[in-house]
Picture 1 (cartoon, rainbow, N blue to C red):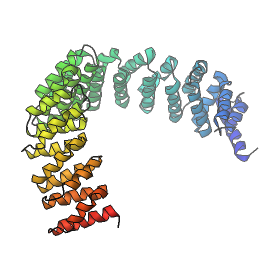
Picture 2: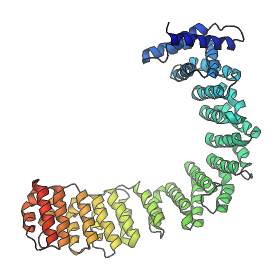
Picture 3: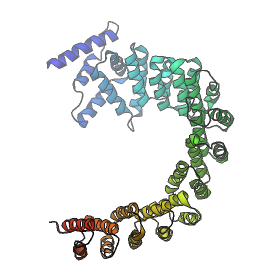
Picture 4: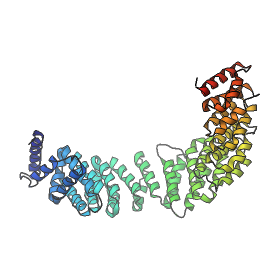
Length: 480
């Protein structure tokens, strides 16, 4: 026998003897033999080891589970592997036996780490029996986090009432964890218990209570949460009241009928006007567009025309998620009615939609006298990727400033079509120098061999900058 295995048997023998209150455990040898083979080098041997653990039955598994308080990694590995094993389909009997064994061991182990370890195992494989066994630890600060996570995962008719009952007996960190658990479990019977804590002087408890109330999503909580959010000025602060009200509105939108959600969102949009309240406005807009899906384009269109650029951008981002051939027509009509930044934003929206129906309005906007709109139209052309607009883009270079010329160059380079190089090549002659330089750079990037003659002609240009760029382009084309 290897020395490491001998040491392992000595440790196991001592632990099992202690666990048996002076009487050596009848499972010592069997457990030692199983642990000696772990971790298994392959899945087949691992399955054999798991079946051997299963044959230990409840008493043997209880003995093994109690050994977790020694901190022995082999023991913890074996228990963790077995927990995963019993959670597989068609192993309900083994799972129930494991739960009973873990619960018995949980009562008997004395160290905090061992209790946490066993609670974590029950979190994975637990049932109503496990929820009842974990209940006493919900009010203990050292164990409440692990216990709460476990009962949330277990859920069910025992776990939920257990959390509410424990809340009445708890304090400190345990109380906060339990408040959060009621919200996460969406256990409506716990509403009164958490509502009673919504005005407590303890900020952490009050914050947790507001979020839990919001998560429960009961319409009767509207006035309380509205008052808290209004008091906070609809901004994010330490009370989390605004975040809670937004969450509450989202919960209402998940329910049917959705009218309460519409009322809340409309109220928030009326009451939130300052830039500081922007996150709340955006959240309310999202809810309003969701519950009024059939009228969502109009709602987002009105928001896109808002003077606050961040709010407008948020509206357009929401609209982009639902752009398709069915609702493009609304935005085509809307862009014609708008001006300035609002029109620019909608042009980019249409370009990003890649709906060919947008070609006409984007092409018309290329000639807009408003530089913001014109710039947006250029970018939208690149996003749309319609090759029929390449000539229009290059034409706009003739009367553009330097920034616009090089913006068009960059957009042309994003368009995947041979027409970019061919159109750029035939547009070189008798053009402003900056335009020629930009087009030469496009030809260089595309290595447009068909434009070699026109590039060579510009190597004799009277403008030194054009001559220099023509030489660079020729070198890029010929590779010499």
